[in-house]
Length: 300
Image 1 (cartoon, one colour):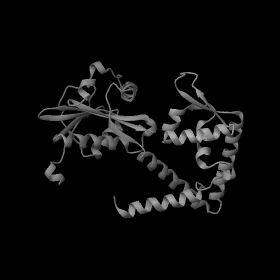
Image 2 (cartoon, helix red, strand yellow; image 1 turned 90 degrees about the vertical axis):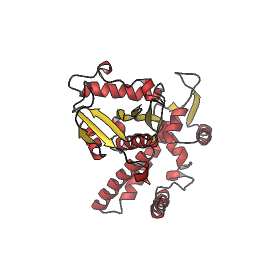
Image 3 (cartoon, helix red, strand yellow; image 1 turned 30 degrees about the vertical axis):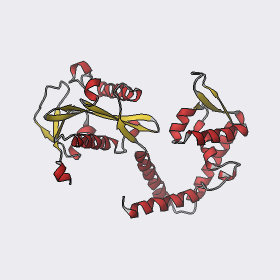
Image 4 (cartoon, one colour; image 1 turned 135 degrees about the vertical axis):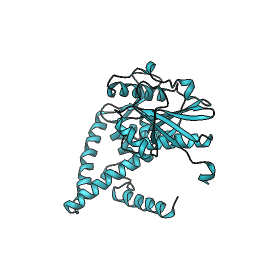
């Protein structure tokens, strides 16, 4: 990683942590640090399971437990067995906790207004737009992509959502039985692979490969959750599949898609896939694409 990029990130971090008060023991002049304040805000009116809270905030379980114990001692949070599953711990705000959360909300609004107040109208718009871009990119950097067994709950969620979206968008719906197969066994090594993308522990995308000895590999099941679109995740999934293929010596990738999926067609073309004559009898396909991967010698 380039030194100037690393230095830029560290400089930004120092400025932001100081400007928002992250270094203060009493965040927003309340009697608790930023970590406890964020947990109060994240719990919300309904509360949530501790495991879900930990994944959402990307916190170490020991650190989150200490934060919750401190909030319990102050009478702001109650932690106990979930009403849905007694084996799962759940955290909820007490009446005092809801009042403290409301006070933090008001103070946070005041702090945001104070940060913007010294700036001109144009500078305010530029700062807020820049913040939105930084938030988007930080969210993209928090996405994890890894191989996942097709039987895993995250994989099943992505595949169900993928089928449901195709059924909504295709002119004649979508029936997996009429489509070329990508069964679990075909997306499991060594026959293939399924990659699943997760954000704060939740599945937000997938992409798969079917491998064939001595023949091009097939890209299948490319899907990104609507909540994660605009983060470059489709391109990242495709790049990960290409890297996986190249590592196995695959030189050519193929895929087909439907005319209703404009964004997918744009992604494939931008990623260097060229449209070719049909190479299979996929019922739902209107476009067929192919890409030749560079050889190891070319990569070197």
